[in-house]
Image (cartoon, rainbow, N blue to C red; front, top):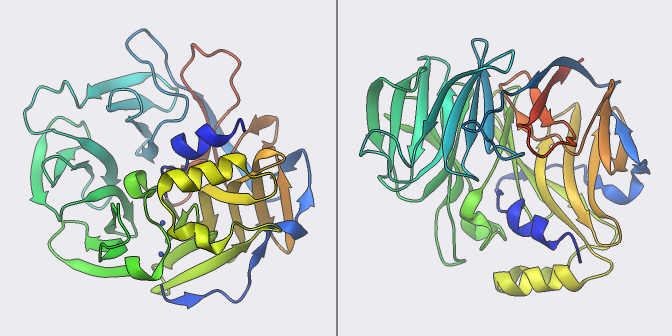
Length: 349
């Protein structure tokens, strides 16, 4: 089945407590369209072609993109663990490769984000178990903090730093979702305990989306969107119902057994990546055995499923992430593989 590499390359980005949302997301009831139109829900803010030279080569799906004070911070760990800082016209301001950086402090940089309250760049280094705080030029070290072992993803959200710890066995204890003060002086909360959720071996590269004071994340073999609302101080699970769900006993199997099952199935669907949910809309993309990767979008009582999204004159395969708490982004379809990604930034109407 052609889409199995997507599970390995895309799904390794993933994640879980309290109240369950009373409304299930039912994919089978969504209207089928080749391309889902988003014009009723979002507006295009800007399209940015990132500069390309022999020394500025990004993967076509960077790990994280952030927008702050008219600059784009693009973290790409799929190639060489690089940070690129661009102007909004796409021209490069600065490039840092963390593997070859002129410092001995970086051992294994796995994530970064902008601390808006202190105008700092926070860099999460798994190898040293530290978060390094730099000026926005990514040159001046402002401080560092030792953190618990195993933190693998980090987002700045609602004035806090939120971490996702890695989890590699069903025997580990802890929580998927840990909230700290932005200066890392105190932990403010932890949510979605390991033992109540099914995620096992896909925890090596969790990803979660922050938008409008609300965080969302997911698990590929649990068909559930997990959210935390900072305003309501509420954690929720939102179940996703496919017409042919995976069997529940698959959760207990080893990773290779899960991959083999999905690779050879002809009927089941699998919720895989890029999920977000709030009171106004929700979206995610998933694998359908007959149709490959599909998108789901729901808003204002309407739900759609299709191969791609259309917004104005632009087409893209999936809503990738948010660049700040007000704006989403995606990667426009590209015909020329030699070019850096072209970003489309869009906000809610």
